[in-house]
Length: 173
Picture 1 (cartoon, rainbow, N blue to C red):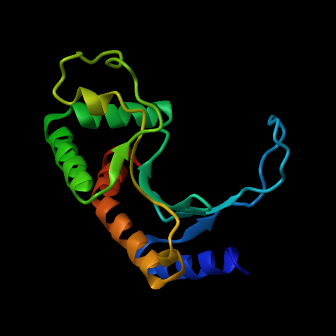
Picture 2: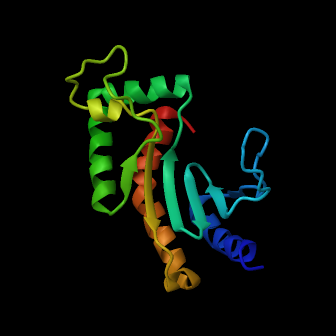
């Protein structure tokens, strides 16, 4: 009642604009973990193509993008980044997303240039990424129990939208 119901209500309101949600299961996979606690301590959901909402005692987290790219998708991503037109467009979108107050990063970033790319490539920083996500995290505060939480989620997802659409168009869904 105190965790799932508010998340379900939020997801219902987000669905028309951001797509069908998929709520993650509350059970942890404990097979290979020293910690055998059976339940997660957070609630999270995926929205449509690339949106993500996560709520826990650490606060509210919103993101969009492609967290981890499989090898074929990573090849498409790097080809699009290296291409003059699509790569320049991505650079602009990353700058706009950061100006909107979101972090743009990846789950894994190589320390050097990936194979086949020059170390002095103009977009080497983006080529080193093995995924690309825009995200925003807010610490716990009283506003989390108000409509302001939804407003912040919507604002972050809208700000991340153009970057997410570039990824869908150039890498695939």
